[in-house]
Every structure is written in C-alpha cells, then in structure tokens.
Length: 294
Image (cartoon, rainbow, N blue to C red; front, side, top):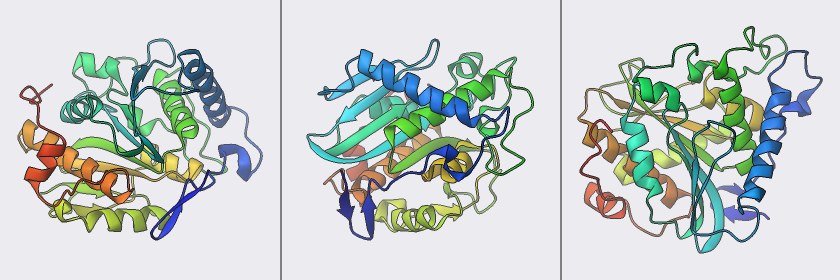
C-alpha cells in the first residue's frame, strides 16, 4: 500500500541488496536475505503476521534481543528506533526502553530494538570480548568492499540480522541512538549524523526544522561499516545517528533522544501531539526516575 506525505511518497519501493548485480563469493549480502526470511518465519510463528496487538515483543534468532512493536490504531509508516550498538553507551537503551513502554503512535508502527548488542551491554564495554565493533561490522557497498575477511566474528552475523530486520520492516526512517565523545566536532551540542543521499538529507533538514530540535547540528556522512551507511547504500533506508554528548547528564541525554523521536513521529504524521517545547515533549514521553546510567 502506498500513501503520501507532503513532499514525498510513503512506503517507497526499496531495492533488494542483490538487485545491483552479481554477488561475490563470501559476500555478506546473501545472509541478509536469509536473516530476513528467518525473521518473517518467526514473526508468523509468534503471531505478528496477522492482526497484531498494540504492544508485542517478538524475539528473532537465538540469543538475540527482543523487538518491541507499538501499533497505531490507523495505518501509517514505520519508524524504527535502535540503541545499544555500543555497550558502553547506556542512555540510548534507557530511552528506547522508555519508548517501548508506550504510548503507541496514532498512526503507523514504532519498532524498537533497545539493545542491539546485549553481550557488550552486560560487560559494560564498547564491544564484547571476541567481537569487533558492531557499528563497523555492517557490509560496505561496492564491487570489492562488500566481502568481510573474518566471517567467524559474531559481530558480522549480528549486523546481518539487523539489516534483515530493516529489510523486513521497511521503515521510512531509522533513528540510531548513540553517545558522542567528540568524535563529531561540529559543536558541543547534539548532532544528527546523516547519509549523503538526497532522500536522507532532505528528511534530516525537515526534522531539524522542528522547534524542539533547536541546538542540534547536521553532520555526516556516517562511517563505513556503520548501520547508517549500510542501510542507506544497500536498502535505501535512511538511518540518522542521533549523537548526544556524553558530557551531558544521563537524564538530559534521554530527554534529547525522546525529543528527537517525538519530532520524527510528528514529521511522519504518526503523532498529532506538538513537540514545540521540552515540557510538551516530556508530557508525551515522561522521563523515568531511573534513566541515569540504566
């Protein structure tokens, strides 16, 4: 089904990763397709393929974190929120869990993956022992760079499973929540790290026009091997890295993530609530007393 939003079409056709030509031996892309089929089968098994409840948690893959879906009463786009790609960044998962507690959007579906790397989260490390950096483990588009050398690294399988989730859910936008240690030097405030594609850039500029996004800067492109770079290049799905400085208090980081999510919901027509001030945003997504360092 296709619907329209001002300035663009909702649910555009997404090219499959293999549509650009032959796949090399050892490429990660066939595993993305397998991951998508596995996800579809498990979704059907757990009752997500038919009429869905307003809140559902669906595990996919042994040992992989659960996915929460919040279903609106009316049809609409999919917003996917992911956090915890790095295990030493705790505020993003705290915000994602707060979002997963509801409320559901007015329209469309919010898909939430609060801990993409629970192994690293449990260890309190950027990545777990025996793993590489998950947000550098995604396949890189190109004739010679889509093959990854050490396929025994579990980070590659997790990255492929996450891309399989995106290929299945077909989100209109993905927000990837991170804490910044000044890797991005555009200022002392929060940033959106945006892929260079026209669609992603236009959507990011529209999001930054929301009054509640004052103080956010626009930068990019995302690093090679990141979820944002891979999803944009391989699936034509825009992923914005939401970078909040780790010098901010944990509760303030969570508040800024929730303001960004509220602005995205409004932009995509999924919410009728204004997000012009922090107070209004907090009323839409009330802060939890235990968000600091969760």
